[in-house]
Length: 322
Image (cartoon, rainbow, N blue to C red):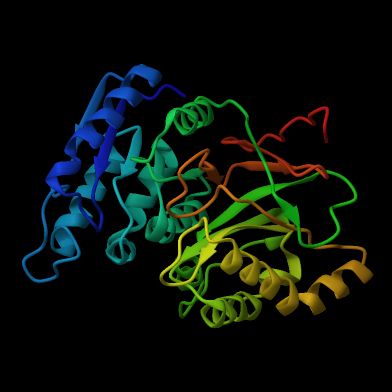
C-alpha cells in the first residue's frame, strides 16, 4: 500500500513547545523514507484543556480530530499516550469503523493508546503498530519504516520462563501496555477474541508485583491464559525504577511464572503448552533497539528466541537459527 499522507494527532496528552523540533524531525524523516506527499500536524498538539489539564482539548474536539484523521490520512500517528485516549472510543461510531475498514489507514501509537489500537484491531481486523513514534533512533527508525513497507523485521528475545516451544511459534500479536489492555477487556460486554490465534505482548510502568497480580488475575478471568498461543513479557517496572533496574524485572518475571504455574503445567499435560519469553527491548524508556510490534499482524518466535514480525497476516519465514 502506498502511504501518501501522514497525520500526527494528540488524542490525549500533548507535547511541550520545546519538543517541536523532535516532532518536526520525525515527520521529516518519515516523509523522506516513505516518499509521502504530505505531512500534517493536527491541532491541539501543544495545548492543554482549560478544565482537564492533562488532556489537550475537550473530548468532542479531540474526537472530531480523530474522525477527520481516519478520513484523510493514510498513516495516523498519536504523538503520545495518555489516559484521555480511552475517551475517544465512546465517540467512534459504526460509520467511523466502516471508514477504517474501507480505507485501512495505519495507526501508530504507544502506552495508553493501547486502548484505541486494540479497539481498532478488534472491530475492524486491520493491523496497527505499537510504538512511541517520537522515540526513533536510527535502528528503531529502520525497523519502523521496514515494517510499514511490508518487510520482515527481527529481534532477539532474552530468556524463556518455560520450556521453549517444540517448534517455531506463529500467531497474531495482541496487547501492548498491560494496564490499558486489561481496561480494554474490563467492560460490560468484553470484546471477544479467539485467543488460540494470538500471542500476548505486554509491558508496563509504575506497576509493582501486587499491581501485576491484579492485572494477571483479570486476564485469567477473561480466559486469556486458557488459549493464548504464547506470552512475551517486556519491561515491567514499579514506581521509582527504570527499565535498567534488573532486580524488579526479575521479580516480575518470577511472579508471572509462579502465578501461572498451574496453567503452564495443565497446558503442558494437555499437549498445548504456553511458552513465555522475556525481552529487554519492549516497554517505556527503552533507549536502544525498541521493539516495533504490529498488533493484528504476524509474529513468529523460534526456539532460539528469534522474534520475526510482519505487518500483514502472512507467516514469517523460518530463519537459519530457528
